[in-house]
Image 1 (cartoon, rainbow, N blue to C red):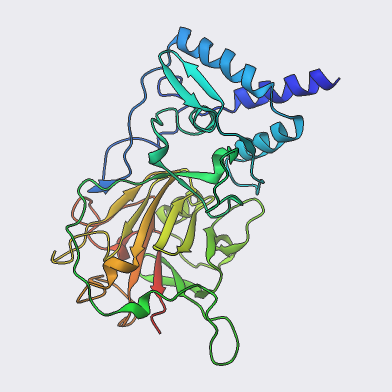
Image 2 (image 1 turned 135 degrees about the vertical axis):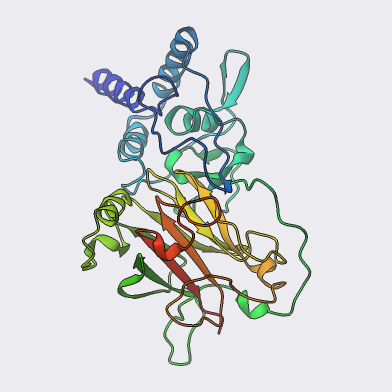
Length: 352
């Protein structure tokens, strides 16, 4: 019975592996052209029968050496596609596996099999803040949970060097700063819009990490699906249904990161993603599973103006970031303004 259950878990895990282009199951929202700047989407060669068989044999042999409870943790993360909270999967970091002519560490192999078949190097990855081993160094064990990781979004052309400007109030020491009343201060507020209409109240963010979603198992945060909207547009309703797991907004020491948890691209416009001397800001496309530093504290210190957003409910004295779900806008798209996008967010930072 013990062996039967273990073998069953291994078979279920293999069936839940990430699809490779050409096998008929690849998510069209994960790769493809479009946008001015985007997360690097490298095409994966069509699956080769011999290579697939070798990878299957290797993966099965490695998974069968993992404890049963750890297999259950991995299966929970993989089958829910990161929607269910799952603990760290701590495994030896020095175990290497060889596929063809290439050798991979155990974490890299699991990340390739269950999330990104085109993954080439660990430098392309960013550990998510939900990982308990986040920021910790353990030479013996490392978290191999594929859904505790994200891909780094690379811009097509990096912005030029920034000069220092005295605005250090943008960079408080941590997100637990107390207001005069003794309550924890918010570091940003989030507004949800459907085209030109704001839906629901402003959501004040005090915790360092916030999930913004439409439908997320075990979801805890800003649930857009619970907001009352009178918009009857078929496009708005279609995009709203595609938000799914949405995004994760995280305040970290170097800035504010956005992780795309959904199955479709998101689009971001921020003052710190581009040349501060440019007349207009580019809209950046971020693919599913990718993270981008949407707001950089150090770069913000050099900016003479916080925003050039064409549509806000009222004048903003601080910095804002605009995020659209599924549909892009700007010079590379038919929609010139974000107010034409079906579903979008405005993140307004507290600079007090």
